Image (cartoon, one colour):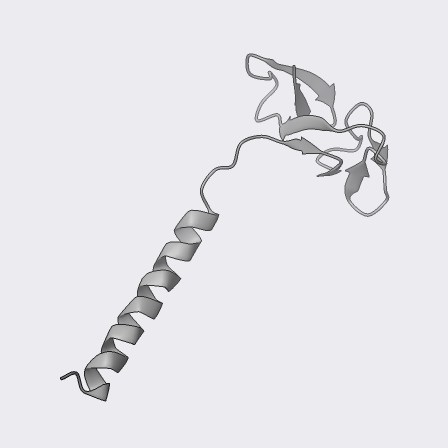
Length: 90
Protein backbone atom coordinates (compact mmCIF):
# COMPACT_ATOMS: atom_id res chain seq x y z
CA UNK A 1 0.00 0.00 0.00
CA UNK A 2 1.25 3.51 -0.85
CA UNK A 3 1.93 5.84 2.02
CA UNK A 4 1.19 9.55 1.83
CA UNK A 5 4.89 10.41 1.46
CA UNK A 6 5.30 8.54 -1.85
CA UNK A 7 2.05 10.03 -3.16
CA UNK A 8 3.33 13.49 -2.37
CA UNK A 9 6.64 12.75 -4.11
CA UNK A 10 4.78 11.60 -7.23
CA UNK A 11 2.64 14.74 -7.16
CA UNK A 12 5.74 16.94 -6.82
CA UNK A 13 7.40 15.20 -9.77
CA UNK A 14 4.30 15.70 -11.90
CA UNK A 15 4.14 19.40 -11.00
CA UNK A 16 7.83 19.90 -11.85
CA UNK A 17 7.40 18.07 -15.15
CA UNK A 18 4.48 20.32 -16.10
CA UNK A 19 6.40 23.43 -15.05
CA UNK A 20 9.26 22.39 -17.32
CA UNK A 21 7.07 21.54 -20.32
CA UNK A 22 4.80 24.61 -20.37
CA UNK A 23 7.55 27.12 -21.32
CA UNK A 24 8.75 24.83 -24.11
CA UNK A 25 5.27 24.51 -25.60
CA UNK A 26 4.45 28.20 -25.28
CA UNK A 27 7.72 29.28 -26.91
CA UNK A 28 7.29 27.10 -30.00
CA UNK A 29 7.02 29.06 -33.26
CA UNK A 30 3.52 29.87 -34.41
CA UNK A 31 2.49 30.18 -38.04
CA UNK A 32 2.21 33.72 -39.36
CA UNK A 33 -1.23 35.22 -38.98
CA UNK A 34 -2.87 38.50 -39.89
CA UNK A 35 -2.38 41.38 -37.44
CA UNK A 36 -4.59 44.40 -37.01
CA UNK A 37 -2.21 46.00 -34.48
CA UNK A 38 1.59 45.84 -34.75
CA UNK A 39 4.46 47.34 -32.77
CA UNK A 40 5.89 50.51 -34.31
CA UNK A 41 9.45 49.60 -35.34
CA UNK A 42 10.51 52.80 -37.11
CA UNK A 43 9.35 56.42 -37.33
CA UNK A 44 6.60 55.42 -39.76
CA UNK A 45 3.91 52.74 -39.72
CA UNK A 46 3.56 50.06 -42.41
CA UNK A 47 1.44 50.96 -45.43
CA UNK A 48 -2.26 50.72 -44.53
CA UNK A 49 -1.68 51.20 -40.79
CA UNK A 50 -2.27 54.32 -38.66
CA UNK A 51 0.04 55.58 -35.88
CA UNK A 52 -1.82 55.24 -32.57
CA UNK A 53 0.74 57.46 -30.70
CA UNK A 54 1.38 54.70 -28.15
CA UNK A 55 4.15 52.81 -29.93
CA UNK A 56 1.67 50.78 -31.98
CA UNK A 57 0.23 50.92 -35.48
CA UNK A 58 -3.36 49.85 -36.18
CA UNK A 59 -5.33 48.96 -39.28
CA UNK A 60 -8.44 50.19 -37.39
CA UNK A 61 -10.24 46.94 -38.17
CA UNK A 62 -10.58 47.79 -41.86
CA UNK A 63 -8.18 45.11 -43.03
CA UNK A 64 -5.57 42.80 -41.66
CA UNK A 65 -2.36 41.74 -43.30
CA UNK A 66 0.10 39.04 -42.39
CA UNK A 67 3.14 41.07 -41.38
CA UNK A 68 6.57 40.21 -40.04
CA UNK A 69 9.50 42.41 -39.11
CA UNK A 70 12.03 42.88 -41.89
CA UNK A 71 15.23 41.48 -40.43
CA UNK A 72 17.40 43.36 -42.92
CA UNK A 73 16.91 45.55 -45.96
CA UNK A 74 15.34 42.78 -48.08
CA UNK A 75 12.16 40.82 -47.41
CA UNK A 76 12.29 37.05 -47.94
CA UNK A 77 10.75 35.37 -50.96
CA UNK A 78 6.95 35.62 -50.92
CA UNK A 79 6.96 38.79 -48.81
CA UNK A 80 6.79 42.45 -49.97
CA UNK A 81 8.13 45.49 -48.11
CA UNK A 82 5.38 47.71 -46.68
CA UNK A 83 7.52 50.27 -44.89
CA UNK A 84 7.85 50.82 -41.17
CA UNK A 85 10.34 47.95 -40.93
CA UNK A 86 7.78 45.29 -41.95
CA UNK A 87 7.19 42.82 -44.77
CA UNK A 88 3.71 41.73 -45.92
CA UNK A 89 2.96 38.19 -47.06
CA UNK A 90 1.76 37.92 -50.69
